[in-house]
Structures are given as structure tokens and as C-alpha cells.
Amino acid sequence: MNSHADDPCGPRPTHDDTLEPTHPGDAAGHPLERYASIVDDLDALIETSRRPLPRAVWINTLLTPPEPIAAAVLQRCPDARPVPGVPHAFRLPAGTSPGTWPEFALGLLHAQEQATLWPADLVGAQPGERVLDLCAAPGNKTLRLAVAMRDSGTIVANERYHARLPALRHNLERLGVTSVAVVDGDGCSLPDELGPFDRALVDVPCTCEGTGRKTGGRLRATSTRERDMMSSIQTGLLRRALRLVRPGGTVVYATCTYAPEENEGVLDRISPELATIEPIDVPDGMRTAPGVPEWQGQRYRDDVAHAVRIWAHHNDTGGFFVARLRRL
Image (cartoon, rainbow, N blue to C red; front, side, top):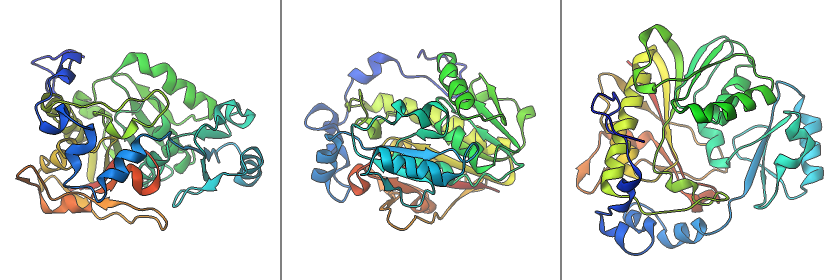
């Protein structure tokens, strides 16, 4: 990505930005050591980050009743277990290949990382509403929005990077979703005419520290410069989403990184007069941590404590961060 002075999201990181460690935790030791002061068990986090990631699947109730597909999942994988707080979803052991199952090819099942299932549901999308998915590809969370809405209403799925659109469209077609309009544009500058929306999901691009356990994933150190650039983009996206929803509308902000600069720090840049951060009910059986109140001497707005951190070692998943905001 190239930086542009007139980019409404601010400068974009380049590959060289990742080679300039400016925090002591970046240059030596494990990349996650920089979070020793905010995680309950750093050793457990690092150890978990080195293990293969378990898989998860959920049933597409738009095309099938859940009971027969649930039985098929348990037949194909007797070790499958329900995902806490997510109906019709199953956790599978690492190394399972649900993409090879006929139920997947027919669109009756979809595979998605467990940590990202419940946060997408926090949007609370209802049938008949207008919902914005601001950074949509490859469409995992778009699909969950469509299922929650029973494919009724309108979802505008925006994606800035044209090369990612085929995967988004393929997933929509495979699961038989018809209520989604795909838009190819910069989320920071979507026109007002697209709104107003009842709800929005802003699952922003980030430094992806929580995805290192995925097949082919790689946990790397990131520089202060890269994190600052990413937080500028993320802030622009979140502000635009809040402007595109109606007053009283819901916006869910999410990342797959642990960096406070990209999480609580972005929320702190949102004016309290524009939006409040709401408490989130965590499902039984799921372990989370609250948003951190401060980082490296910077104190954040008080209601960032309502945000939710998903550390990889708490539920043996990837890492994730999610907050739900209400536009005033």
C-alpha cells in the first residue's frame, strides 16, 4: 500500500514500515512480550500462539434446518464441540479440513475462526434493516449478518481492495445469499448517499497479531510507525461508519490484533459527543478480558473498559478485540 497525502484515512503502511522496530519489545524476544503488563499470563499466551489453531464451522440456516447438518458434523468429526454463545457452530480439532466436506461445497456449512464468530453477532442485525459491512472481504462476517437477517433487508458490503472481491462474491454465492450489495470503494470516503444505516460492522485492517496461529500465518514484530499508520486508517474508518449510521444506530468495531494503539487508542479518538461505548454481555463458557484503561502513559476514555479482548490462551483461539458503540 502506498501513502497519499489526500487519503481520508491518512498514510498507508508500506512493506518497509515493518522493518523499523522502535519499541524494545519489537527488537528482542518474542513479539508478544510488549503486552506483559496487560495480559494475565504472558507465558501461556506465547505458548498458545505457537500451537496450530483449532477450526470452527457454522451451519447456514438459510439453506437447511440445523439438526441434520449438526448430525453430519458430529459424524464426520466426533471430537466436534459446540462453540459457547454461538448457536449451530462447532469447534473442530486443529488439522480438520471441513472445506473438503460435501456440506461445505453445497453451502450448508461455512468455516470461520472461532474468535471472530461471536463478535460479528454483536452487531445485532435484524431482518429488514440496512446494515453496512465497511471492510467486508472475504465475507465471513457478511455471511453471518445475512443469516441473522434471514437474507431480508440490505447489507452493503464494501471492500477497498479489488483483488479480494472474488472471494467475497464466491462465498455469498455458495451460501445462497441475495441481500448483499457489493461495493468496491475506500471505506473512509463512502458517500453520505449510501446511508443512513441501522447498523455497521467495522472489522478494520490491522497488524494481525491474533492470526499468527492460522495455517500459513506468521507472528512478526511490528514497528511504532506501522501501528501509528494503521491506527490512523482505523480511526478514519470508524468515524466514517459512525457518520453513516442513523442517530441511535449501532457500530461494532473489531480487530484481530492485541495492540492498544489499534484498539483502545482508536476508540479514544472518537468524541464522546459522537458515540458511547456500550457494555457487552459475554456468553457463558467464554473467557474474555476488558479493554485496558491506559497504555504507555496514555490514559483512555473511561468507557473503553466496556470493550472486550480475546486473548488466544483464554479459549485456545486466535486473538481478537471488539467494541460496540452507539451513535448519539
